Length: 260
Image (tube, rainbow, N blue to C red; front, side, top):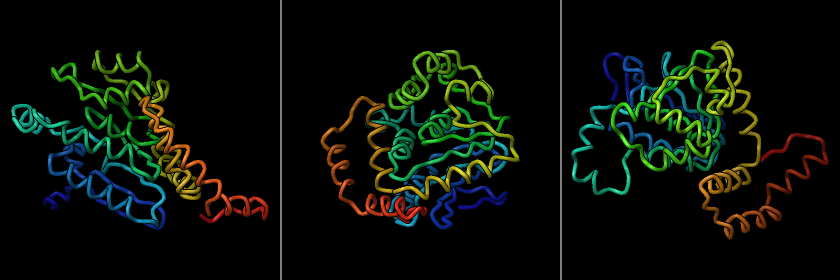
């Protein structure tokens, strides 16, 4: 549904090997509403089901990436018996699904990122942000104990000390500090953002998709301390006799880019 001001649920565009999901409520700093969560899950499924898609870029409309999940929805869910009995929040399900997406993901941080959306961005494999970006995680100010997979992502990606600093102080940090602690993969001026994202997306789209998907899964499992060793060994053995390695070796011998 599109509002009169042009705002809508997240939008998907697929162009060649690249899919782009754009958060699209700029008047509210791309705040995520309850209905958006189901839309995102469907878009993730659509991206993963399309064999032509090799990379996903997640970004926002306007000058902010996202102000996070609608606090009104959080308050409503806090008193819901259904929510209290569920295995995890709807937002957590969306973020975990993004982290586990088979294709590599880039968060194009076109501006500030706040609240739950800091975890949404952190679930992407790479985060390229403008040098005016900023972030904060206000859970401690709100009296909210954050969900466990989000805390785990902060700890595994940023380290214990940085996770404590961000969660327990609820202080805002600017782009240079985001880069220093590893939240940003790269920091660029606004005018260079698209070039940087496009360059990384092109690199990822040109690499072997099955090999990348398997290694991404193993890396995420290592980060969680829950590696499926049998599955990882199986993927390794299969790759040694698969079509991708045959093309990769042939391309190397012929001194040309591989075509996966």
